[in-house]
Image (cartoon, rainbow, N blue to C red; front, side):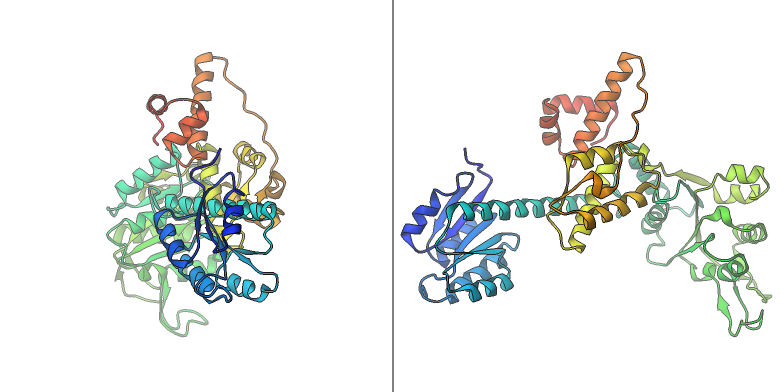
Length: 451
């Protein structure tokens, strides 16, 4: 039975070969044309995934001029279409030229139907994979916030909070483990704020030595210390009218905590070695992976500073607690990085998907991105395996005894997994679950899952 969504266009002027090729592809809807005009008209009506193109077309059946012109026109109209050149035994040089112009592959006459069918199926498979990658890329652009890729209710709640607080100047504290995306959330807060046209100045308080951190933040005057050969504004001044992002603020030394507190209260800075107070208009965002309440109890973080920087606290959940996000993020990373490594046809094996969903991801999104990159490099075929990702299955969580809880938890996981697998398509997810669209809509509503 033919798959009506798989279209093959054959451009061949030899009537005998036309008849032979028409019946060689059982899985395709085949359109036969004999010259460039017919081929382009057919392509405009129903864009094919694959084209079989003879280079020797009328009015130049003995040459390749018309065939190469047809190739160029096809790729201009449908650049994603895979064109397989069918050429004579002694015309390999022109076939290579066609490959250089953008053809996918070539096959030399006399045509071998079985080999040609294999080439066409492989080309169509690549065509479908590239279309899927393009669709995933477009779905990334339709994410709730630019650069934040998510489908989980936990992160969607974070995104809604970001949208609410971004237009204000309220000082915001981002809490979360390393690799959860605190910096990306800070960028989203800046990009959605009235200060988006100005600078977002970021400084990692844990990455700069303590003796240099003060001058980095507040700047210094010429001659303030050895090596201070010119007046240098600090990061706070550079962020004037924009946003200052203090990453790993929990590592800020106690002496600088007092100076930062004064700035937050007065909104003026005084450079090292200077006497002049410089007013600065800036929004403050802070982030840390540490428990600041524990640091306060140990005398390592000022309580009054904590209350100044935590007017709004935004907690970024770890990846293991984001239902369905592992697969959504994995597909997005694969889509981006497979292109970079010139391997756009890659996909995950079923075992790799199961392993990713079972793994706890202690390194969060950063670890997931690293493992996907490793998998792309290590993959030997067209699939990334569990071994390529260096993943082992995590132990199963203990199940509750209450049957209602078991049923609801199983339904929730199945629905979220299906929605993630099929990129939030209600129709495809319902088909995979073996239920109707209305039933799936009811489940989404009852379980509190937003599609």
